[in-house]
Amino acid sequence: MDGARGESSGNLCSKIVAQLKVFVSSIFTINFLKVFLGGQVLSLLICGTAITSQLLHDRYAVSAPTAQSFLNYLLLAIVYCIALCCRKDRQDNFYHVFLSRWWQYILVALVDVEANYLVVKAYQFTTLTSVQLLDCITIPVVLILSFVILRVSFRINHIVGVMICIIGVPLMIWADSILGKSDTEDKPQKVLGDALCLIGASLYGISNVAEEYVVRRFTRVEFLGMVGLFGTFISGTQLLILERAELTSITWTYEVVLLFLAFAICLFCLYSLFPLVIKWSSALVVNLSILTADFYSLIVSIFVFQYAFNGLYVGSFIVIVLGIVVYGILPPRESQHNLFRHCSCLNSYSLFHNDYGTNSENENPDLTVTSGDGELTEEERDKWHRAANESLNERNCESQA
Image 1 (cartoon, rainbow, N blue to C red):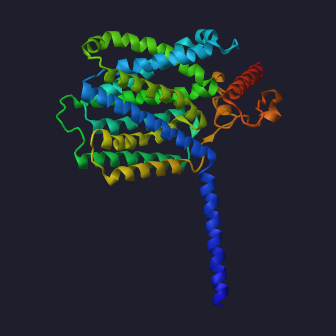
Image 2 (cartoon, rainbow, N blue to C red):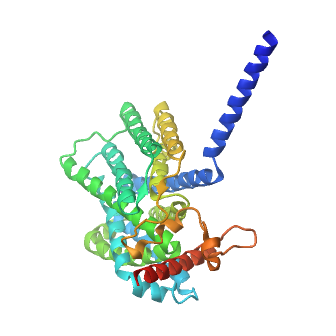
Image 3 (cartoon, rainbow, N blue to C red):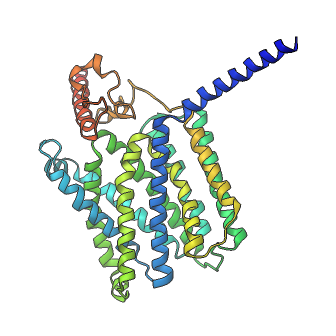
């Protein structure tokens, strides 16, 4: 009798373990790990920009946010515009892209430049704690715009995951206040600083959603090249108007030059990788993942700025990672047939969300583009995107006729 009970309990345990393994394997897929690790690399790059910027301000009294961003946009323009010029496809080279969509990219570049400027500028008027808390407004902005513009239908696990991630930020700020590292000095224009941070973080959300749409409908190289080109002109003009006196007053030692270059390289790598991770997932997932950037910055600050350590930092990191896992339990629901049906210029978006080539074999054999190992390269994906877009536009024209 006891042996039978032991055998039944053993079978029950084995079933529970097997079901648990299936559940865990269904969440921690290769795609999830790729997106998560990509998000953590982005967080480390953000950490690099934060540390170099703080070193410039604290040790060398340099406060020139537009000048720092200008170098990044210049690098983007040089690298990716050259890549566009080298393309042989007339529909995809620099000349065609510039003539077809120049004014859209001017707007996106303007939003991106001012987002960078306003958030950094906010530090002069408000506290570090306020900036850390208020810049999380990017997440609900991306959530709302993804629902309204990209027509992503979120499930309950996505809302819960977002809420869990946002809870992790106040935990980190609480740890700051306990250790006395928060900027508690009097800020007579704190309301102005908070407003600048809110506006800048909201612009980040708009820029991220625009970036998600562009990299899915067109290409990552096109987005980075055009934003880099117009961002260089916009930030360069702003630099001459607002920061000319600041640049002339800087003592250009080799340490300052190296910090400027380190900031620009980190930001360039961040911009280059950001649309790739968005292509793997979405703008919302990426913004949730980079919440861990504050944790990495605090860890580095322990060694660089002799900050004290608090266990709440680790707790906040675990909470944010838990929120990302909850978000990834089920994918968002997206309409494959009615998405943007009232706007033919946006009809291709649903075809390009994460899974490339879905149902393409039966519908149009010409759209099947694979490499020798069965894995699509980025160039092949871009070709498939263009072919799918042209095919879909032809169908729209036929149906309208």
